[in-house]
Image 1 (cartoon, helix red, strand yellow):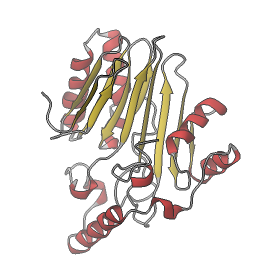
Image 2 (spheres, rainbow, N blue to C red; image 1 turned 90 degrees about the vertical axis):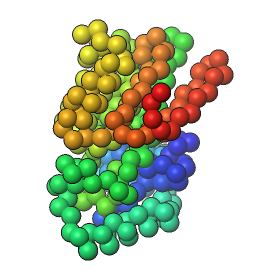
Image 3 (tube, rainbow, N blue to C red; image 1 turned 45 degrees about the vertical axis):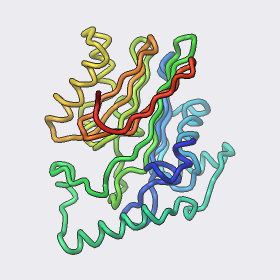
Image 4 (cartoon, helix red, strand yellow; image 1 turned 45 degrees about the horizontal axis):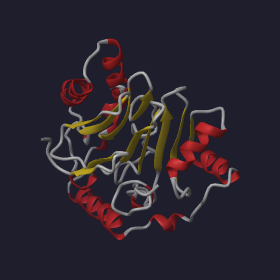
Length: 261
């Protein structure tokens, strides 16, 4: 919620605008003990989408709710609702205007954007977190506003369990950011967990395999954070940088932004 409430990230308060000048936000959460999970997609009036995903996980028989139906459910559960103007930020609105001007001058084929890695102001800003408690229970969550100027109700990997979010006490918890279509096509987070569980690959090597040899070879960009069943912290990305950090019960705090050590 701290990250969603900040205008600095592409989630919640800082969510980017779609082609119609609105936000369509997605989020998911999963806990690794029972594999219980919840997700929401395409919502616009819930202040904290990750809390909506938590309600889907804890208080419904479903895994994913979308659009107006999801918002109606969250209102019934008493979650804080806001007018869409709450999500206004001048920097995100200016991003939308710049991209629209660029497309007017040089029309862009939306279907080719990802294949050409046309990023520019469409840079990632998805937020995610993974945690483990003293009993070894892992949880992972991801929240995003998607792509600036996105069309047709596009939904990426963030609300899809196994693609952008996954948690399993037998292996690890993962949250991903990047070009979501490629994380969906490779079922990226689940693929990393499978490599660890079934092929006994190290978490770092599993991340590298999926990000570089699977997603990267398809033309996708992004990164993942991972916390394994022994509370070891890993991350990897195939971009120039990825904002990331961790906090341990010992008081150790680390924040990093750019290249891997």
